[in-house]
Length: 258
View 1: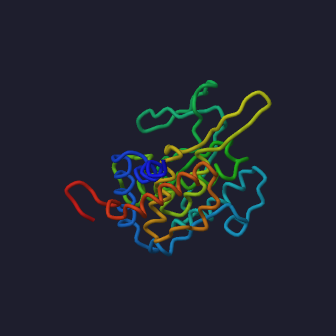
View 2 (view 1 turned 120 degrees about the vertical axis):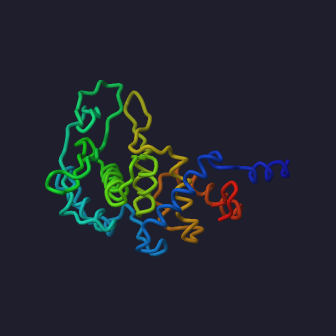
View 3 (view 1 turned 90 degrees about the vertical axis):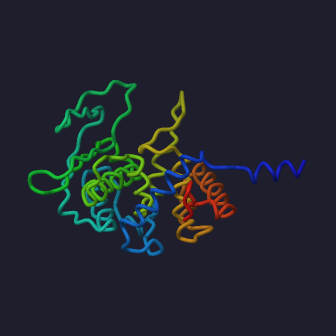
């Protein structure tokens, strides 16, 4: 009985092979593209007053305070970024060179933020949905995601947008705790319960991405992981354990040894 138990534990694999290699390859690309500061010196932000000394009141001013903290950590000038807001219940319709907002019905997924590129005043422009202002975790996660668009599409001039890579970049730039937690937030009402979230990655993909980040930084038990919600923290630990037990396979690709 015990032999079978340990065998099944050893054979555990997070995600599937293609997914793992997607995240492994792209986090290496981010590390090659953004070399300063070095990975081991990158600050990991957590939901603490020391990292975000903000008096949260659900105001638009909170968004500008978050912008300053997140942008400066990403080596972006906040004065070169313009924020505006749109109301809950609107969704985007991409119409070529412009973006049109339409009313959502109740079954549609709301957007949390939008990235436009540079405007005529040479400022990067983003929009935030006002529904996230009352949720600091979602606000920080959304801000990090939209600013990562600036890093990838703006600074690096990537030709094609990749939302999954953009989510992964939030981990690389130190805001993965917020992004992961925002992707899986429970709610409970008197007649129902469930979860909602922002971002494109699923909770186990966030867990693997965070584990890769820790693995590259030689962290086997990072303190910042204690701020992850229980579901993601559990999967994070399993993913990191898998990496430590299979080090020779991590960052190893078909027909190539890294």
